[in-house]
Length: 131
Image 1 (tube, helix red, strand yellow):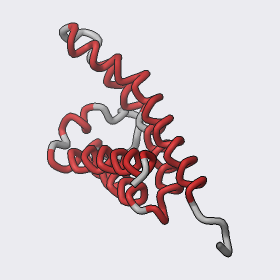
Image 2 (image 1 turned 90 degrees about the horizontal axis):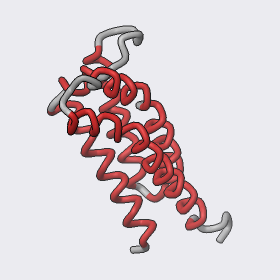
Image 3 (image 1 turned 135 degrees about the vertical axis):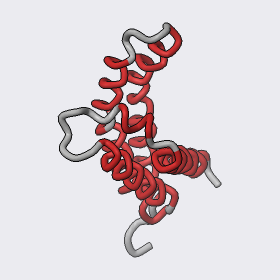
Image 4 (image 1 turned 90 degrees about the vertical axis):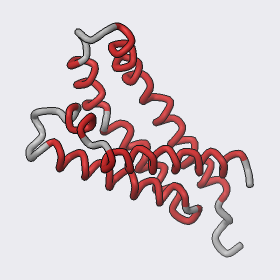
């Protein structure tokens, strides 16, 4: 197994773990759903959990890894408004919690980069058509 395969599997595990948490402990996720979204926060929490689990499965499988990794990059970008809301909501919390909320903002960039690297590495490792 190559380093890129191990990295892709780690990304899939991260996504699967976070997706599972959306169902096991939904309240923290409900709290960061932007208010302007239609419907209930719980619906968005469950929908994003399903999306993370689906993307995790796609990243885990070599045949669908490239598309799954691109979807992961999009998903990481799409949750940025929730991280902004969390940073705003937690601005008056104790310093360690506030630091955690603010650290999540630039923390999305390495996740997006990881997903894009996985997509690129997957494309390079696929056999040429007819080979």
